[in-house]
Amino acid sequence: MTHEPHPLDFPADPFEVAQNAAADIARLTGVDRHDLAVTLGSGWGRAAELVGETVATIPATEVTGFSKPALEGHVGTLRSVRTPDGRHVLVIGARTHYYEGHGVRRVVHSVRTAAAAGAKTMVLTNGAGGIKGAWSPGQPVLISDHLNLTSDSPLEGATFIDLTDLYSSRLRDVAREVDPSLDEGVYCQFRGPQYETPAEVQMAKTLGGHIVGMSTALEAIAARQAGMEVLGFSLITNLAAGISPTPLSHQEVIEAGQAAESRISQLLADVIGRIR
Ligand code: 8IG
Image (cartoon, rainbow, N blue to C red; front, side, top):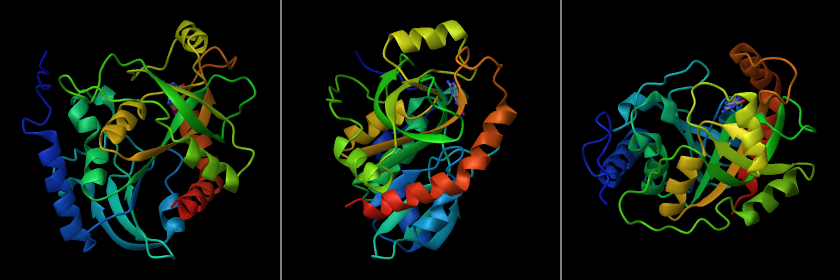
């Protein structure tokens, strides 16, 4: 079976588009290769300045294949940050979500670009709903595995990729060296953009899920395909529908993210500082 690209997706080979994007980044930042990349989801935005010294900030729209940010709270920039020990971190503040309807090649373009830029580690962060009753809004958790409920894949054709230990247990251990209290859970990617019904949240729970979101799983698959080691963090900005007695509001989600931002950004920066 061959894969027909989405009508709004890249018509060209997505890996070639990523190579071109990586060349744009090298030219615009003056940094030839990056060691690690991190995608900042809602709530994680302030980590960039804590990771090290910003060498260059570029609007994502100047880099091949990146589309305009769709959502408030999602910064459309790419940054090159130099850590105190001289490593180069590509900070991706521009995420294309599956629900935008531009096809999965665009969704994973930033991940493939990071790999083409040299990154061996991909740190994926997001804001998400929590299913575990003991969690509360503003709490960061590690992603231990995922359920991809999108019925889609970034892999095209007969590309069989093993996903064992996709969310690296080694890197989760590194994160727990920084914060031993970090809990972890299975991330369920729904297509969105609507939040789940309470019944869908119960379904996810029955299937073994603990976190509900609309990004990360497809990106993690692409990162594994590219040979990167993956670390995933979710900021629980809300309890999933039906877990909390009150309905979800996008405003509340934004506010929970803002309230937790300094603390979790410091956590993320400290973890990135320890990854080797
Ligand atoms: I922030 O409750 C955020 N993103 N699917 N469900 C899903 N995505 C989310 C949620 C949530 N909260």
